Amino acid sequence: MGARVLVVHDGRSPRVARMAEAVAEGVHRAPGAEAEVKDVSQAGRGNLERADAIALGSPNWSGITGLMKQWMDDLGDLWEEGVLNGKPGAAFTTGRGRSSGIEFTLLSLIHWMLANGMIIVGLPWSDRMRVSGAYYGAAAAGEIAADDLALARDLGERLARVALRLGDASGQ
Image 1 (cartoon, rainbow, N blue to C red):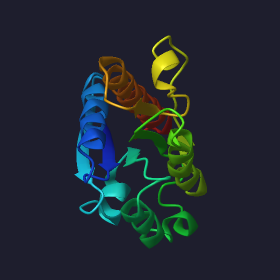
Image 2 (cartoon, rainbow, N blue to C red):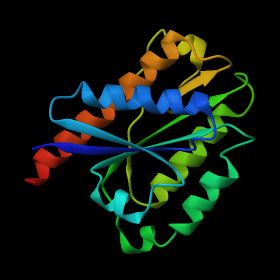
Image 3 (cartoon, rainbow, N blue to C red):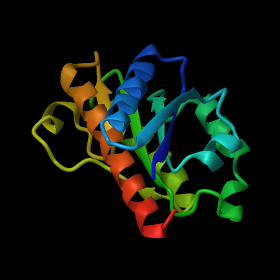
């Protein structure tokens, strides 16, 4: 049994793209899991349907980007159909500073996942969070540090392991 993890991000931000790649590296640390990284402009309904888990990433531009919001709105019927119901999801972001709205961006991504009935996967506390402030997902404030990438890898691995466990429990 394997788990397919879809990592969707707004690729207009090179820093978020780096975090997306780190999430995917973490996914690959979970035996039997594979990651597919997609720019939000290239990710569609079929990608979401085929995924066993989904990680969403947006730079913090006073919250999620307009492109990410448009994508979420265009896929608004998924919640009503239950397409993502029960799939694990996680969020990641980057911002200019710790007080720039990073938590709001993460919570906006998580809100969409909750509205779709997804199971939210976060990170357990670690000393690395003292710097990044990544309480709701992986985040980088300012320039991306090694600890930020490590947290993104940890988030990807944790998301993949949850997807693998859920797949085993459902007999898939």
